[in-house]
Length: 336
Image (tube, rainbow, N blue to C red; front, side, top):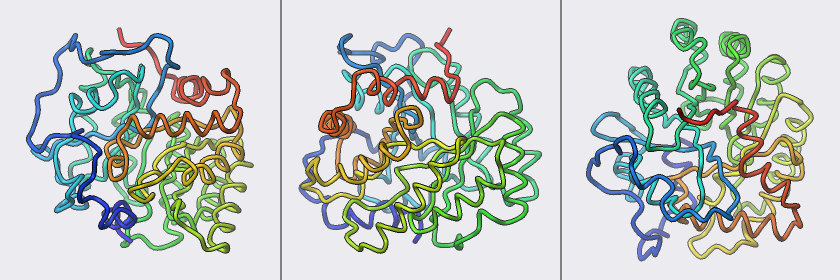
């Protein structure tokens, strides 16, 4: 299944008549200038501070995203000003950019684009996970360009695209490149099919000095009812959680829900993931604008807050989930 199909398969037919509201424009919008008043607008000081560890942005006047072409919801521009509007009032104090599967020839351009945002005041972005192809011969030269860069935190390659076979992450060159990331102090995001998480665990075992992040609670759809598939996902998540160098992003799965989802539909996957990884190795991630396939950014945040309340999570552990763990894991600094 390719990225576009993966993101939209559960949302097909659910978009017409959606009441999500406007979160992204169809035309290019200027990036905010330093001091943009949208940052922190309407923020309630009593809210838990949020670090969004999975912030997507894309400007289709700058980048080619084949997977977004023709997509009714995602096939348009989503720039910083859109994100600031979508997250206003939620006390998002820092964000980490997440690569958007640009074409390989645009990887450097994407990295430079987000580095400019990280250096610019007026937006919360203070770190980035950039695109990379670890199995390629040119990966070493590419990533060494960012050695010691304070903003480049890690690399991701989406592994659930239909042209990527199972076990691809165990390719000899792929493993060698991910080991290099550890030497450089960078992380690698595991964004893979839910039934292949044990391949991810094998990769982690070969790269003990590299830190890993399981994206989107391991990517099991909240609509999955097959007991064998759910068990295989759980087995993969449990195996990864046994590795001390792996953390889990609590994100993404709302995009697989039905249009009329309820918190109870999301809770089993989220609760299992949070309990499996424990209070010190789980991090909130917005996955905006992909989450808008079924929910606004605010609806997703509030759904997760309701889930952790249902779980009886302490205030201290909620702050770890939404803020502290991400700051520590990514070594995030305040903007000058």
